[in-house]
Length: 362
Image (cartoon, rainbow, N blue to C red):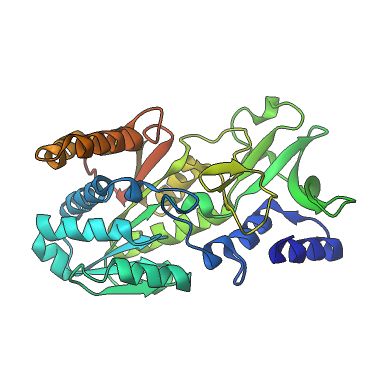
């Protein structure tokens, strides 16, 4: 039994079942034993690989988009380019290198900022970004970012923000909670809370007994905070994650360890816990703040910005093994059976602004 599991069992025994959101928060962010505060989870030797770690092309094309977006919003100076949930700093490193080549004036004039709460990951990020030729600032929340226009990027950040689940029981939707069985093991139970009918996704009324819906108020609150800052100061945002374009019924709560799925109750704090992102809910928060929101698949986004052409450039003078590796990266990032369709890209921009490869209909 891990230390975190023991504390969770003791808490539940003393105070009753906890929500799925509370369980996620403890497992991921506990100050002593949380997944992100006690380990380095990224890369081939960790538990999962994010798009920036697959290929430099991902970060380069995000940098291209930021340059296009900066032009579209009027080339504001000064401007802060920030990343929330920056992992090892790989994406920001590739973005910075790309901006330095595309527009040296933007690179020099922009403030670079990372929003990171983990001291361990901050130290890794400092080492990754030590040679980019520019100072980087660290922040614990978007609220402390420098004043002025803000261009913010988040890659696989919303999936790790805790989600609430509700299960259809006896015709009503009760919050799915986590209790302890007679053997002292964690298990799902139906909690006391219920979900208002107007919050149910389309199709939920006809869902079968035992069906599950997921609501993520913490994700909406985070997007509202980001969108509010952009609406007030000017700027834009780009957010990439796996999820669905429209709300749906279904259980997407999952655990990943050493690149393999595992039971969500196995070794709390030792595995990554996530769920799919409801992009419609995030887009609604941006529009409520007075911004436009555009959504497309990751495959369409990267291909529209020149992924194939960039792969050709990198492979032009490379050996056959390197070209094969580049081709595999293209397939992983943009292929329909890999990340290309499951992963979505959400851009939030000032009203009436469109940045390629998005168009007004997206």
